[in-house]
Image 1 (cartoon, rainbow, N blue to C red):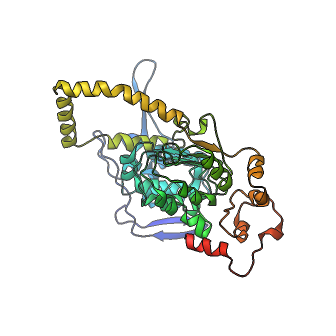
Image 2 (cartoon, one colour; image 1 turned 135 degrees about the horizontal axis):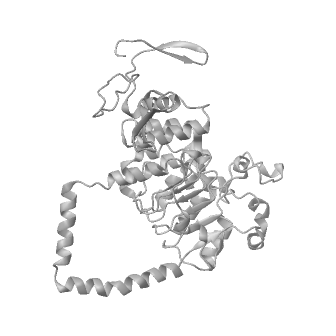
Image 3 (cartoon, rainbow, N blue to C red; image 1 turned 30 degrees about the vertical axis):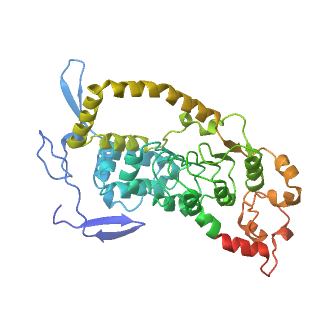
Length: 405
Protein backbone atom coordinates (compact mmCIF):
# COMPACT_ATOMS: atom_id res chain seq x y z
CA UNK A 1 0.00 0.00 0.00
CA UNK A 2 2.91 2.40 0.51
CA UNK A 3 3.86 2.55 -3.17
CA UNK A 4 0.51 1.72 -4.79
CA UNK A 5 -1.79 4.09 -6.63
CA UNK A 6 -5.29 4.67 -5.26
CA UNK A 7 -8.26 5.16 -7.57
CA UNK A 8 -11.64 6.48 -6.50
CA UNK A 9 -14.90 6.28 -8.44
CA UNK A 10 -16.88 9.46 -7.82
CA UNK A 11 -20.02 10.57 -9.66
CA UNK A 12 -19.56 7.98 -12.33
CA UNK A 13 -15.95 8.87 -13.16
CA UNK A 14 -12.71 7.26 -12.08
CA UNK A 15 -9.93 9.48 -10.80
CA UNK A 16 -6.56 8.92 -9.21
CA UNK A 17 -5.98 10.17 -5.68
CA UNK A 18 -2.54 11.24 -4.59
CA UNK A 19 -1.01 12.34 -1.30
CA UNK A 20 -3.30 10.15 0.80
CA UNK A 21 -1.74 8.20 3.63
CA UNK A 22 -4.05 5.53 4.97
CA UNK A 23 -4.24 5.05 8.70
CA UNK A 24 -2.09 2.25 10.03
CA UNK A 25 -3.92 -0.55 11.84
CA UNK A 26 -3.94 -0.51 15.59
CA UNK A 27 -1.32 -2.80 17.14
CA UNK A 28 -2.58 -6.05 18.60
CA UNK A 29 -0.76 -8.49 20.84
CA UNK A 30 -1.83 -11.62 19.01
CA UNK A 31 -1.79 -10.17 15.50
CA UNK A 32 1.32 -8.62 13.99
CA UNK A 33 -0.02 -7.94 10.54
CA UNK A 34 0.45 -4.39 9.30
CA UNK A 35 -1.36 -4.54 5.97
CA UNK A 36 -4.84 -3.00 6.43
CA UNK A 37 -6.34 -5.33 3.84
CA UNK A 38 -5.12 -8.47 5.64
CA UNK A 39 -7.66 -9.79 8.17
CA UNK A 40 -6.91 -8.49 11.65
CA UNK A 41 -8.02 -9.57 15.08
CA UNK A 42 -10.90 -7.07 15.20
CA UNK A 43 -12.26 -8.60 11.99
CA UNK A 44 -13.30 -11.71 13.91
CA UNK A 45 -16.02 -12.30 16.49
CA UNK A 46 -15.01 -14.69 19.30
CA UNK A 47 -17.81 -16.65 20.97
CA UNK A 48 -18.32 -19.92 22.83
CA UNK A 49 -20.43 -22.83 21.67
CA UNK A 50 -22.69 -25.02 23.80
CA UNK A 51 -19.80 -27.27 24.77
CA UNK A 52 -17.81 -24.28 26.01
CA UNK A 53 -15.26 -24.38 23.24
CA UNK A 54 -13.96 -21.12 21.80
CA UNK A 55 -14.93 -20.44 18.24
CA UNK A 56 -14.70 -17.43 15.99
CA UNK A 57 -16.55 -16.15 12.98
CA UNK A 58 -15.56 -13.43 10.56
CA UNK A 59 -17.31 -10.07 10.56
CA UNK A 60 -19.36 -9.04 7.60
CA UNK A 61 -17.78 -7.08 4.79
CA UNK A 62 -19.94 -4.12 5.78
CA UNK A 63 -18.51 -4.04 9.31
CA UNK A 64 -14.96 -4.35 8.02
CA UNK A 65 -15.54 -1.54 5.54
CA UNK A 66 -17.14 0.59 8.27
CA UNK A 67 -14.05 0.17 10.43
CA UNK A 68 -11.80 1.08 7.52
CA UNK A 69 -13.76 4.28 6.80
CA UNK A 70 -13.66 5.29 10.47
CA UNK A 71 -9.89 4.87 10.60
CA UNK A 72 -9.62 7.18 7.57
CA UNK A 73 -12.52 9.54 8.30
CA UNK A 74 -10.26 12.56 7.77
CA UNK A 75 -9.97 11.60 4.07
CA UNK A 76 -13.74 11.52 3.46
CA UNK A 77 -14.93 14.47 1.40
CA UNK A 78 -18.68 14.23 1.98
CA UNK A 79 -21.40 11.97 3.37
CA UNK A 80 -24.26 13.75 1.64
CA UNK A 81 -26.55 11.21 0.01
CA UNK A 82 -25.73 8.30 2.30
CA UNK A 83 -28.76 6.88 4.16
CA UNK A 84 -29.35 7.93 7.75
CA UNK A 85 -28.93 4.33 8.94
CA UNK A 86 -25.44 4.19 7.45
CA UNK A 87 -24.55 7.57 8.93
CA UNK A 88 -25.75 6.51 12.38
CA UNK A 89 -23.67 3.33 12.34
CA UNK A 90 -20.65 5.22 11.04
CA UNK A 91 -21.00 7.84 13.78
CA UNK A 92 -21.27 5.18 16.49
CA UNK A 93 -18.18 3.41 15.14
CA UNK A 94 -16.25 6.70 15.13
CA UNK A 95 -17.37 7.39 18.69
CA UNK A 96 -16.27 3.93 19.88
CA UNK A 97 -12.87 4.47 18.26
CA UNK A 98 -12.59 7.81 20.12
CA UNK A 99 -12.20 9.73 16.88
CA UNK A 100 -13.88 12.83 18.32
CA UNK A 101 -11.32 13.05 21.13
CA UNK A 102 -8.55 13.70 18.62
CA UNK A 103 -8.32 17.51 18.30
CA UNK A 104 -6.66 17.23 14.88
CA UNK A 105 -9.59 15.55 13.14
CA UNK A 106 -12.56 15.95 15.49
CA UNK A 107 -13.73 19.29 14.04
CA UNK A 108 -13.57 18.04 10.47
CA UNK A 109 -15.35 14.81 11.35
CA UNK A 110 -18.19 16.60 13.16
CA UNK A 111 -18.53 19.05 10.29
CA UNK A 112 -18.71 16.10 7.91
CA UNK A 113 -21.63 14.52 9.78
CA UNK A 114 -23.34 17.86 10.41
CA UNK A 115 -23.41 18.82 6.74
CA UNK A 116 -24.97 15.49 5.80
CA UNK A 117 -27.40 14.78 8.64
CA UNK A 118 -28.16 18.16 10.20
CA UNK A 119 -30.01 18.22 13.51
CA UNK A 120 -29.79 14.44 13.92
CA UNK A 121 -26.15 14.87 14.92
CA UNK A 122 -27.05 17.31 17.71
CA UNK A 123 -30.41 19.00 18.22
CA UNK A 124 -29.96 20.35 21.75
CA UNK A 125 -26.75 21.19 23.63
CA UNK A 126 -26.58 21.87 27.36
CA UNK A 127 -23.34 23.36 28.68
CA UNK A 128 -24.80 24.88 31.82
CA UNK A 129 -22.00 25.90 34.21
CA UNK A 130 -19.48 23.91 32.17
CA UNK A 131 -17.34 26.77 30.91
CA UNK A 132 -14.07 24.74 30.92
CA UNK A 133 -15.63 22.33 28.43
CA UNK A 134 -16.88 25.20 26.28
CA UNK A 135 -13.50 26.89 26.04
CA UNK A 136 -11.64 23.63 25.53
CA UNK A 137 -13.91 22.39 22.71
CA UNK A 138 -14.73 25.70 21.07
CA UNK A 139 -13.74 24.55 17.56
CA UNK A 140 -15.91 21.44 17.79
CA UNK A 141 -18.91 23.33 19.19
CA UNK A 142 -18.78 25.79 16.31
CA UNK A 143 -19.42 22.91 13.90
CA UNK A 144 -22.96 22.43 15.29
CA UNK A 145 -25.03 24.50 12.87
CA UNK A 146 -28.42 22.85 13.42
CA UNK A 147 -29.06 23.37 17.12
CA UNK A 148 -32.58 24.16 18.24
CA UNK A 149 -31.71 24.70 21.91
CA UNK A 150 -28.43 25.96 23.38
CA UNK A 151 -27.84 26.41 27.10
CA UNK A 152 -24.77 28.49 27.95
CA UNK A 153 -25.86 29.55 31.43
CA UNK A 154 -22.87 30.38 33.64
CA UNK A 155 -20.21 29.92 30.94
CA UNK A 156 -18.43 33.26 31.58
CA UNK A 157 -18.88 34.60 28.06
CA UNK A 158 -18.63 38.31 28.82
CA UNK A 159 -19.41 41.01 26.26
CA UNK A 160 -16.82 40.15 23.60
CA UNK A 161 -16.78 36.39 23.31
CA UNK A 162 -15.96 34.80 19.97
CA UNK A 163 -18.98 32.53 20.24
CA UNK A 164 -21.30 35.47 19.47
CA UNK A 165 -20.31 35.25 15.83
CA UNK A 166 -21.37 31.61 15.73
CA UNK A 167 -24.70 32.37 17.42
CA UNK A 168 -25.58 34.88 14.72
CA UNK A 169 -24.29 32.82 11.81
CA UNK A 170 -26.68 32.29 8.93
CA UNK A 171 -26.83 28.51 9.26
CA UNK A 172 -27.51 28.49 13.01
CA UNK A 173 -30.03 31.33 12.79
CA UNK A 174 -32.37 29.15 10.73
CA UNK A 175 -32.70 26.55 13.49
CA UNK A 176 -31.95 28.10 16.92
CA UNK A 177 -35.18 28.50 18.91
CA UNK A 178 -34.05 28.58 22.56
CA UNK A 179 -30.98 30.39 23.90
CA UNK A 180 -29.92 30.52 27.56
CA UNK A 181 -27.12 33.02 28.22
CA UNK A 182 -27.86 33.90 31.82
CA UNK A 183 -25.13 34.53 34.42
CA UNK A 184 -22.46 35.34 31.83
CA UNK A 185 -21.36 38.80 33.00
CA UNK A 186 -23.22 40.37 30.09
CA UNK A 187 -24.02 44.06 29.99
CA UNK A 188 -25.96 46.28 27.62
CA UNK A 189 -22.94 46.36 25.32
CA UNK A 190 -22.94 42.57 25.10
CA UNK A 191 -26.57 42.44 24.01
CA UNK A 192 -25.91 45.26 21.58
CA UNK A 193 -23.13 43.27 19.96
CA UNK A 194 -25.12 40.04 19.96
CA UNK A 195 -28.09 41.60 18.16
CA UNK A 196 -26.06 43.84 15.85
CA UNK A 197 -26.24 41.52 12.78
CA UNK A 198 -30.03 41.32 12.80
CA UNK A 199 -30.47 45.02 13.59
CA UNK A 200 -28.07 46.20 10.93
CA UNK A 201 -28.20 43.47 8.25
CA UNK A 202 -31.41 41.61 9.16
CA UNK A 203 -29.72 38.25 9.69
CA UNK A 204 -29.09 36.16 12.77
CA UNK A 205 -31.44 34.77 15.45
CA UNK A 206 -34.41 35.00 13.09
CA UNK A 207 -36.25 32.04 14.66
CA UNK A 208 -35.40 32.70 18.32
CA UNK A 209 -38.50 32.25 20.50
CA UNK A 210 -37.03 31.88 24.01
CA UNK A 211 -34.24 33.98 25.51
CA UNK A 212 -32.74 33.80 28.99
CA UNK A 213 -30.58 36.79 29.96
CA UNK A 214 -31.08 36.49 33.72
CA UNK A 215 -28.44 37.35 36.33
CA UNK A 216 -26.60 39.76 34.04
CA UNK A 217 -25.93 43.47 34.40
CA UNK A 218 -28.78 44.36 32.06
CA UNK A 219 -30.66 47.65 32.24
CA UNK A 220 -33.93 48.75 30.71
CA UNK A 221 -32.02 50.34 27.86
CA UNK A 222 -30.97 46.89 26.61
CA UNK A 223 -34.59 45.93 25.94
CA UNK A 224 -34.50 48.14 22.88
CA UNK A 225 -31.89 45.83 21.34
CA UNK A 226 -34.33 42.91 21.56
CA UNK A 227 -37.06 44.52 19.47
CA UNK A 228 -35.42 43.16 16.32
CA UNK A 229 -36.12 39.53 17.29
CA UNK A 230 -39.21 38.79 15.20
CA UNK A 231 -40.44 35.65 17.00
CA UNK A 232 -39.42 36.29 20.62
CA UNK A 233 -42.21 34.85 22.81
CA UNK A 234 -40.54 34.17 26.21
CA UNK A 235 -37.99 36.28 28.09
CA UNK A 236 -36.29 35.80 31.46
CA UNK A 237 -34.73 38.91 33.03
CA UNK A 238 -34.53 37.68 36.62
CA UNK A 239 -31.62 38.89 38.72
CA UNK A 240 -30.89 41.92 36.53
CA UNK A 241 -31.14 45.61 37.35
CA UNK A 242 -34.72 45.60 36.10
CA UNK A 243 -37.32 46.02 38.84
CA UNK A 244 -40.86 44.83 38.54
CA UNK A 245 -43.33 47.68 38.31
CA UNK A 246 -45.85 49.39 36.11
CA UNK A 247 -43.07 51.08 34.17
CA UNK A 248 -41.32 47.81 33.31
CA UNK A 249 -44.60 46.13 32.39
CA UNK A 250 -45.51 49.01 30.09
CA UNK A 251 -42.07 48.97 28.47
CA UNK A 252 -42.23 45.23 27.86
CA UNK A 253 -45.68 45.52 26.37
CA UNK A 254 -44.90 48.48 24.15
CA UNK A 255 -41.49 47.36 22.86
CA UNK A 256 -41.73 43.56 22.77
CA UNK A 257 -45.42 42.76 23.14
CA UNK A 258 -44.71 40.66 26.25
CA UNK A 259 -46.64 40.56 29.51
CA UNK A 260 -45.53 39.58 33.00
CA UNK A 261 -46.14 35.99 34.11
CA UNK A 262 -47.44 35.68 37.65
CA UNK A 263 -46.15 32.09 37.84
CA UNK A 264 -42.62 31.04 36.77
CA UNK A 265 -42.61 29.67 33.25
CA UNK A 266 -41.71 26.01 33.01
CA UNK A 267 -39.80 26.69 29.78
CA UNK A 268 -37.00 28.23 31.85
CA UNK A 269 -36.72 25.19 34.10
CA UNK A 270 -33.28 23.61 33.77
CA UNK A 271 -34.69 20.10 34.19
CA UNK A 272 -36.10 20.34 30.67
CA UNK A 273 -32.73 21.20 29.13
CA UNK A 274 -30.53 18.34 28.01
CA UNK A 275 -28.18 17.30 25.24
CA UNK A 276 -29.92 15.33 22.51
CA UNK A 277 -28.60 13.79 19.31
CA UNK A 278 -26.01 11.38 18.02
CA UNK A 279 -23.25 13.43 19.63
CA UNK A 280 -24.68 13.18 23.15
CA UNK A 281 -22.11 10.58 24.17
CA UNK A 282 -19.38 12.59 22.42
CA UNK A 283 -20.05 15.54 24.75
CA UNK A 284 -19.89 13.14 27.69
CA UNK A 285 -16.55 11.84 26.42
CA UNK A 286 -15.22 15.39 26.25
CA UNK A 287 -16.28 16.06 29.82
CA UNK A 288 -14.82 12.81 31.14
CA UNK A 289 -11.58 13.47 29.29
CA UNK A 290 -11.30 17.00 30.67
CA UNK A 291 -12.05 15.75 34.20
CA UNK A 292 -8.69 13.99 34.23
CA UNK A 293 -6.90 16.92 35.80
CA UNK A 294 -3.13 17.31 36.01
CA UNK A 295 -1.41 16.09 39.13
CA UNK A 296 -0.49 19.61 40.24
CA UNK A 297 -4.13 20.68 40.20
CA UNK A 298 -5.14 17.62 42.21
CA UNK A 299 -2.42 18.39 44.77
CA UNK A 300 -3.70 21.95 45.17
CA UNK A 301 -7.26 20.71 45.71
CA UNK A 302 -6.09 18.17 48.28
CA UNK A 303 -4.25 20.92 50.15
CA UNK A 304 -7.39 23.04 50.18
CA UNK A 305 -9.43 20.14 51.52
CA UNK A 306 -6.84 19.51 54.23
CA UNK A 307 -6.90 23.15 55.30
CA UNK A 308 -10.68 23.07 55.54
CA UNK A 309 -10.61 19.84 57.56
CA UNK A 310 -7.91 20.93 59.97
CA UNK A 311 -8.88 24.62 59.94
CA UNK A 312 -9.79 26.74 62.87
CA UNK A 313 -13.21 26.69 64.48
CA UNK A 314 -13.83 30.17 63.14
CA UNK A 315 -13.95 28.79 59.62
CA UNK A 316 -16.47 26.12 60.67
CA UNK A 317 -18.68 28.66 62.42
CA UNK A 318 -18.60 30.93 59.37
CA UNK A 319 -19.77 28.13 57.11
CA UNK A 320 -22.55 27.08 59.48
CA UNK A 321 -23.77 30.63 59.90
CA UNK A 322 -23.76 31.19 56.17
CA UNK A 323 -26.02 28.21 55.45
CA UNK A 324 -29.37 29.85 56.38
CA UNK A 325 -28.46 32.93 54.32
CA UNK A 326 -27.95 30.75 51.28
CA UNK A 327 -31.43 29.24 51.59
CA UNK A 328 -32.90 32.68 52.13
CA UNK A 329 -31.26 34.09 49.01
CA UNK A 330 -32.51 31.10 47.03
CA UNK A 331 -36.07 31.75 48.15
CA UNK A 332 -35.70 35.42 47.27
CA UNK A 333 -34.48 34.52 43.79
CA UNK A 334 -37.49 32.28 43.28
CA UNK A 335 -39.88 35.00 44.47
CA UNK A 336 -38.31 37.59 42.16
CA UNK A 337 -38.53 35.65 38.93
CA UNK A 338 -39.16 38.09 36.10
CA UNK A 339 -40.63 35.97 33.32
CA UNK A 340 -42.41 37.59 30.40
CA UNK A 341 -44.31 35.89 27.61
CA UNK A 342 -46.30 36.76 24.52
CA UNK A 343 -50.02 36.11 24.96
CA UNK A 344 -52.10 34.27 22.42
CA UNK A 345 -53.59 37.58 21.27
CA UNK A 346 -52.32 41.12 21.56
CA UNK A 347 -55.49 42.61 23.00
CA UNK A 348 -53.70 43.96 26.06
CA UNK A 349 -51.03 45.62 24.01
CA UNK A 350 -53.54 47.11 21.56
CA UNK A 351 -55.52 48.68 24.40
CA UNK A 352 -52.43 50.31 25.85
CA UNK A 353 -51.14 51.68 22.53
CA UNK A 354 -54.15 51.95 20.18
CA UNK A 355 -52.36 54.23 17.72
CA UNK A 356 -49.85 51.46 16.93
CA UNK A 357 -52.32 48.63 16.41
CA UNK A 358 -51.30 48.08 12.81
CA UNK A 359 -47.61 48.07 13.65
CA UNK A 360 -48.06 45.58 16.48
CA UNK A 361 -49.41 42.97 14.12
CA UNK A 362 -45.81 42.48 13.08
CA UNK A 363 -43.90 40.96 16.07
CA UNK A 364 -40.49 42.09 14.85
CA UNK A 365 -41.47 45.74 14.47
CA UNK A 366 -39.26 48.25 16.24
CA UNK A 367 -41.06 51.47 17.17
CA UNK A 368 -37.86 53.43 16.50
CA UNK A 369 -37.46 52.07 12.97
CA UNK A 370 -39.08 53.06 9.73
CA UNK A 371 -41.87 50.93 8.34
CA UNK A 372 -39.69 50.05 5.36
CA UNK A 373 -37.86 47.53 7.53
CA UNK A 374 -41.03 45.53 8.14
CA UNK A 375 -40.75 44.12 4.64
CA UNK A 376 -38.00 41.77 5.85
CA UNK A 377 -40.06 40.32 8.69
CA UNK A 378 -41.94 37.07 8.81
CA UNK A 379 -44.39 36.72 5.95
CA UNK A 380 -46.85 34.85 8.17
CA UNK A 381 -47.87 38.18 9.77
CA UNK A 382 -49.99 39.68 7.04
CA UNK A 383 -50.30 43.43 6.84
CA UNK A 384 -51.55 45.82 4.16
CA UNK A 385 -48.80 46.36 1.59
CA UNK A 386 -49.42 50.06 1.49
CA UNK A 387 -48.24 50.54 5.09
CA UNK A 388 -44.70 49.36 4.31
CA UNK A 389 -43.87 52.47 2.32
CA UNK A 390 -41.79 55.28 3.81
CA UNK A 391 -41.25 58.86 2.93
CA UNK A 392 -38.22 59.53 0.73
CA UNK A 393 -37.02 62.35 2.99
CA UNK A 394 -35.35 61.87 6.36
CA UNK A 395 -37.63 62.58 9.28
CA UNK A 396 -36.80 63.20 12.90
CA UNK A 397 -37.53 59.54 13.63
CA UNK A 398 -34.99 58.50 10.99
CA UNK A 399 -32.32 60.75 12.47
CA UNK A 400 -32.93 59.31 15.94
CA UNK A 401 -32.60 55.82 14.51
CA UNK A 402 -29.25 56.61 12.88
CA UNK A 403 -27.97 58.19 16.05
CA UNK A 404 -28.92 55.09 18.06
CA UNK A 405 -26.40 53.05 16.08
